[in-house]
Each structure stands twice: as C-alpha cells, then as structure tokens.
Length: 69
Length: 150
Image (cartoon, rainbow over all chains, first blue to last red; front, side, top):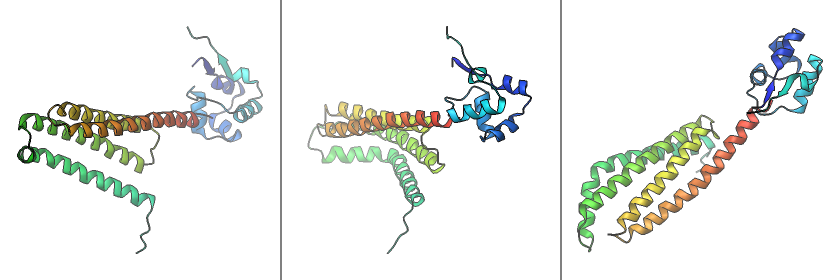
C-alpha cells in the first residue's frame, strides 16, 4: 500500500500506550493494532479526527504517501 | 403439527442430507458395474459397457468431490463464516465439478443422445454456481474491506 500509517511514531512522541489511545479514541485495541500495523483498508474521518485530537497532531503526521516503483 | 423451524434446524437438515447423499455416492462406486449391466440390458441400443462404466465412475467421483466441498461449505456456514475466500473456493470447485459432469455427459452423448440433456442441465447448474461464486467473491471482498475499516 502506498499509504503508510505512522501512528506508532506519533504515539512514541506523545508517550502514549496503545491501550490508552484505544480507550481515548473509543476503538478496540485489536482495531488499533490493525491500524498501527498498516493492515487497515480504510480509516473513518471520525477515527482520524479522534486520533488527531488525542495526539494533538495533523492527519499528515499520521498518514504518509509513498510512490510505488 | 407445529414444528418450530429455525435457521439452525434448516442448516442441520442440509448437513444431514449432504452426508446422506455423500454416503450414497460412495456406495454407488461399488454398484456401478451392476447398474451398467442393467442399463445395457434395458437399453435397445448396442451395448457400450466399458464407455458407460467409465462415464459413471467419472461422474460419481466428481459428485463425491462436489459433495465434500458442499459439506465443507455447510460446516463453515454453521461456524458463522459466510463470506470468506474458503467458501468462494468451495463454490468454485462445485461449479467446476458441474462442468466436469457436463463434459463427461457430452462425450457420452455420442453413444447415448439422452446424456446430452444431462450435460445441458449440469452445465446450466455450473453456470449458475459460477455466478453465485462471483457474487460470493465480491461479498467476501466487501466484508474484508468493512472489517479493515477502522
């Protein structure tokens, strides 16, 4: 996938654990793990909004586009 | 008599029937020589016992493969695993089994014209199953996308 989720980087910067973040944005730890491990097919705006709110960042800080060769 | 007909009971009936037909198809493997002799005797056309035996054996083996896949499919349904790649594969194999029977019967129709009708029916069922398989594959893809939308 050319879109990479850099959630773990942002979480490390903000010093927040996966369990904590999952609870704060109201998703299951299993779903957060899917998102963190780049297994997700899509992200809802509501989820993205909650992540940005809790991590105090922009969507661009979490999502990255890389050109495929 | 009021029978409380539930989804589970319906599924149980389907599974029981599939097992019954599967056992029947396996038993038929031993009865094919007798059936072939009987059919050749009642038929007014010239006897073609080796061809008939080969055709019946092939069809029976294909039917056993299809029934086994059907059994797997029903087992998955009872586990609430509906739109999965495994189920799509099962339906695809069953569809190909129908086309296989159609091919065998089409070949047999050179000697027995009535087999052409069976070939047509088998091909028709195979075609319907192929469309169902396409639909199931699309549903599995949609389910996966839905499951992985966070």
